Length: 256
Image (cartoon, rainbow, N blue to C red; front, side, top):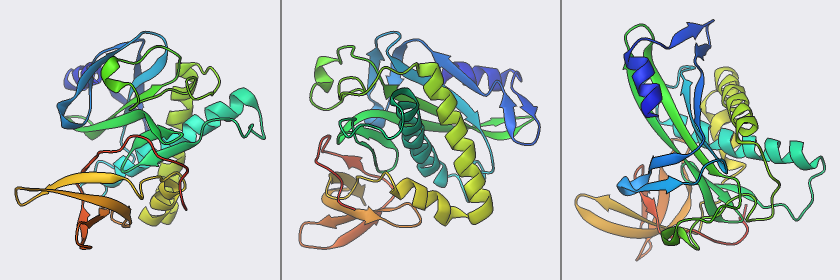
C-alpha cells in the first residue's frame, strides 16, 4: 500500500481505457508492517499468503458509493477464494473443504475463523481523481501464525484447503472486483449487498462500538441495505452502527 501511494503521488499510475489503471495491483512476498483494526500491526512470513494492493475506481470512489466499496471488496475476496479453491480441486468441490465466509464488513473467514482482511484507503491523484487502494491480506499456507493470533486466526491450508499460488488468487480477486462492479452498474447497490450476503456469517457475533463516548456491546442481528450493522444491546435495544469491532473470532456454521 505504501508503494501504491508513492506511485500515485509521483504520477506513475496511468489509465488504461475507461475502466483499468496501470499498474493495476502491487503484490508483496512478505509483510513487515501489516495494519488492521485498532492500529494493530504485524509481520507475516514470506511466500505463504496473498499480500496485495489493488488500485481501483469504477465509480466507488465517489462519495455516495465509497461506503459500498468495503462490501464489494469483501464479496470479491470471498468469491475469489472460492473460485481459486474450486480451480485447484475441481467441481464439485469436496465437502471437507473449509467453509468460506465474511464477517462485517470485509473480514474473510474460514470455518468461522478469520483468515484475512481488507484495508481500504482513498487517495487523490491529480490526473486520475480519487483512486481506492484496496489492501488485501489472505492467509493461505501452513506457516505458523504469531503467538498472539493463536486460536484467533487461521489459513486455508491449516483448515484443510489446497495449496494456492498467491498470484493466481490475486487474479481471481481482480476478476471478482470488476465482475461485481459490473453488477452494480447494471443493478445498483442492492446487487452488491446480495452478493455480499451470500457469504455473510456476521449474525450472532459480539461487537463493541462507541456511541457518544460510551462503550457499548451487542450481538449482531444482521446488516442493513446501507451497510450499517444491527446490534442487540443488553436490555433488547437495537442499535444500527457503521463503526464496530468484533470480539469473537470463531463460531459454527452460518445460519442463513
